[in-house]
Amino acid sequence: MYLGLDLGTSSVKAMLIDDAQQVIGVGHAAMTVQRPHPGWSEQAPGDWLRATEEAVAALKASHPKELAAVKGIGLSGHMHGATLIDAKDRVLRPCILWNDTRSHAEAASLDADPRFRALTGNIVFPGFTAPKLAWVKNNEPDTFSKVAKVLLPKDYLRLWLTGEYLSDMSDSAGTSWLDTGKRAWSSELLEATGLTVEQMPGLVEGTDRAGTLRAELAEKWGLGSDVVVAGGAGDNAASACGMGTVAEGQAFVSLGTSGVLFAANASYLPKPESAVHAFCHALPKTWHQMGVILSATDALNWHSTVTGKSAGELTGELGDALKSPTGVTFLPYLSGERTPHNDAKIRGAFIGLGHESDRAVLTQAVLEGVTFAIRDSLEALKSAGTRIDRVTAIGGGSRSCYWLSSIATALDMPVDIPADGDFGAAFGAARLGLIAATGADPLSVCTAPETAETVEPAKGLTSAYETAYGRYRALYPAIRGI
Image (tube, rainbow, N blue to C red; front, side, top):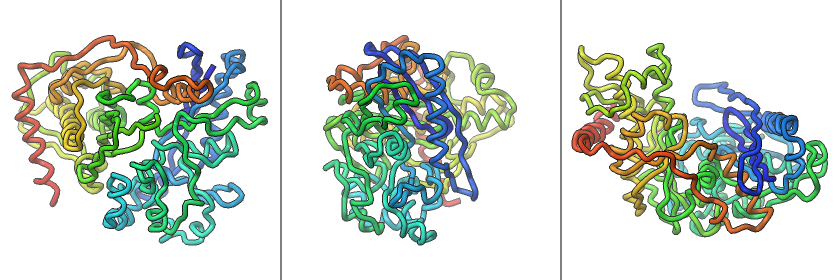
């Protein structure tokens, strides 16, 4: 058996799989986010340990014999979080999370240093780790002076599991300190934020052995000795391992709270000016690119709150047959945007409203707005040298046939719907645990799920969608100044 631990923003998920990669059981435990000031987003790392204990305890209660057979553990976690510990491994302050924007000034300052884009292949976004440390240095100097190690969230979990200070390449690529092409920490970039390589964890590949489970925890959970813990991955790379998106030309679109267009690459293809994320993948000698939008299903959930109708009721009013755009356009920038604008201050808008614009018209515009934001990411990936001809859809929004038809038409490519199953980050983490424990070939393990259905572009609406996308593209520069 193999265990995947996925540290999410709102919960920890523990997934148990067997040698045949069949899911045997799943345990969950909820967590909350603290927002003490506008733009702040924090969690207490101790909550991660509590939630992991609860999730594993749930598995132990339902599958004690299977849990006892675990030989490998893989880790996944939300990226970019700044977990600061002192020389005695004590947490110095709450972790500053990926969606915290307090360090926007520090991010702009670091991004103005050309070395950051040149070495990391990415814009320095406010959500990344380096500007967070610059903020701590500027605003909490006493805390900064005590920092012995900076750990990403899942790697603090690893420290508790194994006693090791280690991180994997995919997660570390989101810090703004990694030389992404060389897959190594950059002493230059660390020095620019007042840090040294010694304050960073060691680096491993996601498939490597990265410690063994502490005897105390193994006994408590009913596991044997010498349980291998894999390097693991950041959440999107882990999801890609779960989806089998690991080879050149493979891609998925994730319609979750945020939206992601993820493409695997056999080589390093940075283009930071496009706001495409160019990161290391969890597998050796593999990279990936991501276009990221900050509000995907979040935009529909906002619309749901305003209208008092559930997301399912709203999309149900549209039916399954795709409609031509109405002329009402929605910009889904409810909390700013990453790809392609890198604009934390921009906000959303409805444009083109008329007396005839009823609730269904607004719902259609919301879905199209998110669709066109994903099309923006596709254009950005194309400009960075990536070519894809089909995508697999995952995430809660992929349950809407209408939305998938909209995406297929806007991207002008087939959208595959995987067969029933859970192929997300916890499953990908469990796969990495299997590889690290057994030495199995990563490509033979990280295979794609069977396709249950394929949604083809609505060819009769391609022209109308192209016109509507052109209108959408023209609106960002029109509202940016206001």
